[in-house]
Length: 105
Image 1 (spheres, helix red, strand yellow):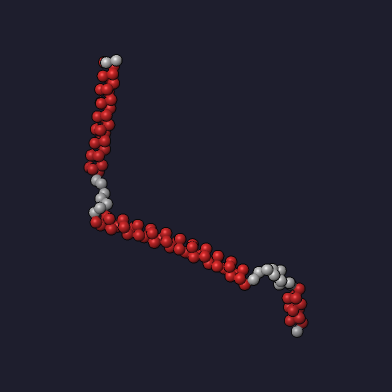
Image 2 (cartoon, rainbow, N blue to C red):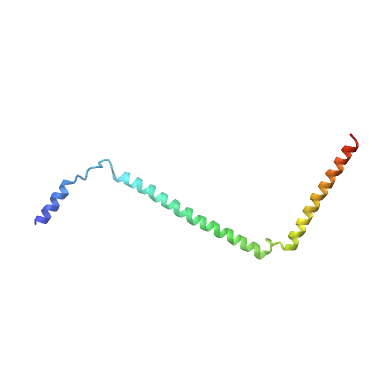
């Protein structure tokens, strides 16, 4: 019996009414916000995962359909030589213009 009496005295020494303004409605309001934030995080994480999966699926279907073709080295070198030829043509044209300006002041 003394142990129970000691527990009873100890429990009486603490005042549980330190937050008298906390009501069940306030606790429920806080819990709703916590649940809302958790739900938003869940949706955000798995929404991102779902979007990534859709993008990968679309890329895969494009490569199978042949729409997304990989360029060969020959095609790349051909495009590079065409651009160099275009640049060279522009440079020659500008030199011709400068020569005309020098000839007819």
